[in-house]
Image 1: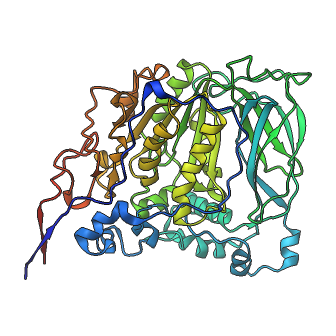
Image 2: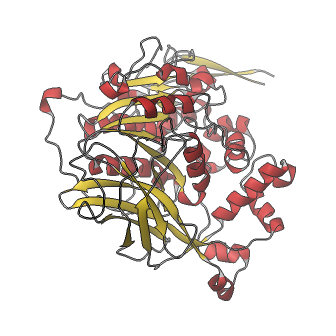
Image 3: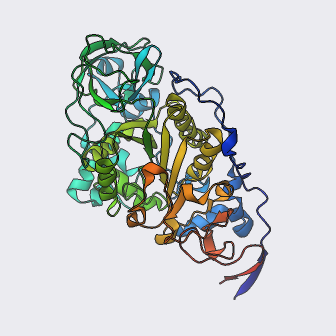
Length: 510
């Protein structure tokens, strides 16, 4: 029997407040460069589900909508955060799960994840950010790894994957089941870095190899209970070191950073002058194919399949690297640091070399995931108050849609361009709505929703020309990309046609 269920849709009273217009003639004075604090959760920003509330209004229960995506969809997808990297085991949970005793752990070698950092120039000279994690990796039998890896997969198993994909799934699972080491003291060796990244210019990215800079650095504090370390440290500067002073050059200088006592803690760091252009890049579904909005595909693309660039995006970045002098590339992912080795390896083989930000272990739950991007954005903006920033991401991240436009008003005259790939405009698998209300009072010339990388060609981003007029925007400054074709009476941003909201919809139930 057919049952016609009439659902009246009300206006979205829970939409985010729009950003206030920026008065060009009322820009506050530029802050002094600072050594910004390390990430720490003291009172993580609370995150509510109101951005996704329209789904519950329509269906009565968000799980009923997501049921079409599969029967084993985790709860964090229903929260409006389609991020499957959540709730990783740490410490005693890993020890218990693997049945390890203290003597077995003691015999394991200590390893270090050293995340590529950036340095800024202050009144005291160069300050370089060192950050990462210290851990031990147990030797886990393959059969046990298979069981653990299967817990992360949906609708398949490691045993059903091709051999190369099964091997990657095991390796990534082994990176998750590690034992973080607290109270560890670290020292580092610095020396000039000849190369970094695939890039479109000699040597990698928008950076140069300095004439010197070799030195030893002692980290000032032991690692945290989660094994993390993160601090800016003043390094030896111009006198006798061969490094150029930050206030006397526009060039970005590249240093290799080796963690003493281990072969695993190597990275490349970037000394970035006070003025210039920095691009902050999300990675999933903008630089690589992830399909984070389709949990089954997203898990396979992250756990098992080789990382694959999204279309010809590497060509766009190679051109920017070649054509824009002293361009600082910075990659920001909210993926937990345990599983970011594959991300860094992919970027350095495919895109210009650059500094990285990842999610520290003390930002572990869904609400913290939504706050860490803003925290890390604020950190790099405050570190370089005189630099201009280009922000790149996609519409499937609710935190991006909120935080990117907010940076325009929070840091006047620092955001030069915002580029957002509209995933729902080209990928029918993206059923998650997104909120464009934050862009309402922004100048159209500083942001663009786009569909394919070629939409970014021939833009003079170095001079703030960020809008390709041939790419339709169709931005309604509200919720867009809603399920069941529910929308705002116009096309979604840069793409898909939707039907009106505020009317009556008949749902035919068999």
